[in-house]
Image: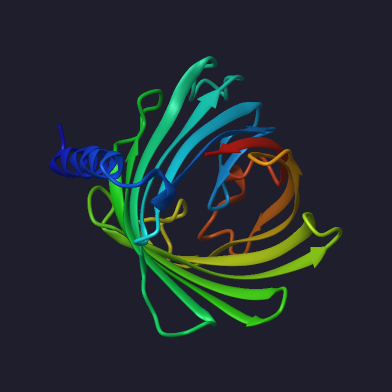
Length: 246
């Protein structure tokens, strides 16, 4: 087993055990699943067919969070992935850095990527995420990731989000983002602007603890030398999600 995998799993287990000794009011857990028409990540199509993406998230008031996310391929994809199999499982440990600011939020963390149902090598990234709440309903984001295991290179993105209230409990969220990638991490072997994504989503509360969401996304490459056209079988995809918090 890779050292980073062992450390991440150990940290996740230790965190869960620590949470079990704390007041239940100090932590919140969310269990959910997204049912998507495709799996697209940083512009790359990993499956252009139906997938199910379950997740478990535990967040503590201290700022420490643990997340487990998976991708289950319901449809196969060009012989690269088999149907009815987990293609990917990610473990994330993150910490919301306390800042004396009402407009800036900072998060640091580590993601461990495992690919039990695919030919890709498992790897890990460290990341820093900044969110700027400039005015009501408008936010900016800057995210930087560095793969320190298999790839040894970076990916960064900038995003803007607009939340349009529909009712007291429901809003339509519109977003746009663009990514820049290092040459060793890019599908085309060139450093540069990778992809842009436009998104729209709405989340509807169902009772006190359940939420249902619907989303649609459009993604395209910015530079075909960085993200080749043949690596993008899907440009429009979307789906629904169901989440239970306790």
